[in-house]
Image 1: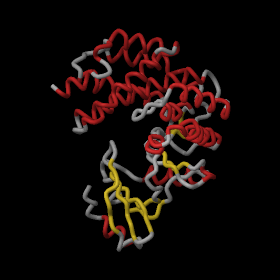
Image 2: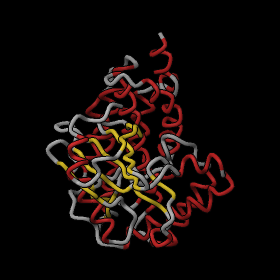
Image 3: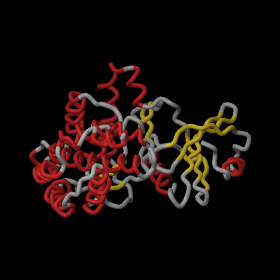
Image 4: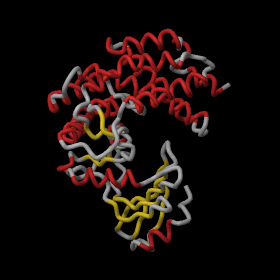
Length: 328
């Protein structure tokens, strides 16, 4: 976590020349984050190095969310050529760690996160590309592209696509008009902050936002890849969202379809992070992802996709299968 070479000059140019640059975090992408401290002032330096990353979508969506009254980080400065952005520091209190210390608050805090989504979905969607069939299929295909070869399975990719083609129309019919979908709305990207007007929640990691179905971010929140959300919390929060937002169509079916699509995608991504990027810690999340995927596949709306999984990936080649391969 050595700061980028261009950081001192960038910070000096926007009035932070005397600040200390301290390591803060990296994530599953090429982005890195540093805390910038100058006396009583604090900010976060995002390092989004081109050509791998482009900070412009983050900036545009942050400004859109802020205009609608949500707590996205304010932008203090930007250097697009070097991929550097200085943003507001929301502190260190993520929803994930807060609930580890205060599990009795789980229902209340998730309630605030669901209310934020319902509020967001009442606003006009951002000017963004659609979360459409092409994107859904490309993402779901990460499972057959990365996970299946990693466990030594040769599967019928055409039948996999056909199964998704059979179920995705229900989601597409119910997604009009679309809402702003943040796409990574979960306990590690939600900060607890002192800002009641924004539900007391700060938003992060939304640079991949699209316009799509309102169930997607709810699935992201309640079928979390990195922490177990109790089933009773999930059920209560889905009911809370439906009561607040009155979504169109068969929302429960759309929730299950998008849950299965997202969880299949994440299984593929986490396999890629291990195999291609040398990040084996992501394998520890796969048992949870398979549990969630199998629960979604049990919904009647997922029949064709469930049949493909039953015929193509045996039970003993799911869950912890990759852990054994990685250890060998």
